[in-house]
Length: 314
Image (cartoon, rainbow, N blue to C red; front, top):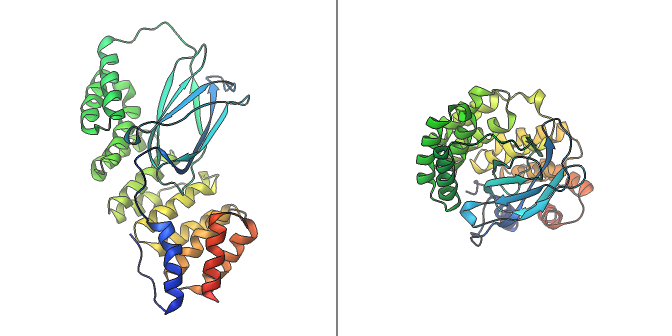
């Protein structure tokens, strides 16, 4: 998925490794370990932080994931995850267990911390047919049998229409795993119809459209993004990363620019925009961004890549 670069002799040859590191590379081992990060906070229904809650992360397609505990502020975080769809199961004494699904679009992208609210455990029984549908869907999803899971979600949707938004979201995520992007967009659009202000779902839907080659649809979804509601540069950064993967470096530069406009100390935005400039042969702009990145983040693998790139651009 490498974009065409303007070739100018040895400069471009020396930069291939830098660009390849970011936009493609060898397949990883089929497990859940990677370079991505998820984080969040567990609260009671009244907003009280829940300390000591168990947070189990599970990537069905990769065979598992880690289990962690919340701190005294109810916060949790884990770095070292592969991109994909993650189930998050939260258990805490005195509260009902809750599961959500999170789509980690890329290992280099960043996501807003996820707020998970737990309800006090109650005695209300769940109808057995609902439990059976949930069980079968869960087993199929964990086993990577996404088509089978979809059939169970359809049953669950008929049994619990009050949970339609959540079910459509899960169906959309599983269809993304199957790379059935048009069908995934149909379900995720229903989630957006229920809450047009859901910035995270809008961005995930746009990313799915871009990954599926529906560039116009993806850009149209992004046009409706309420940028005033975006409080973290990670949102813009993720959009830029998706546009890079869709072979749209010019558009990606715009969104990387938005990330550093929102937060002038957001080092990753400068780095990725600098590399995008390299892909377009804009060496002067690339130098400015890579130097700024090194000012903000002088250590680490990406800093080494930035230095190598600057040496080649002299």
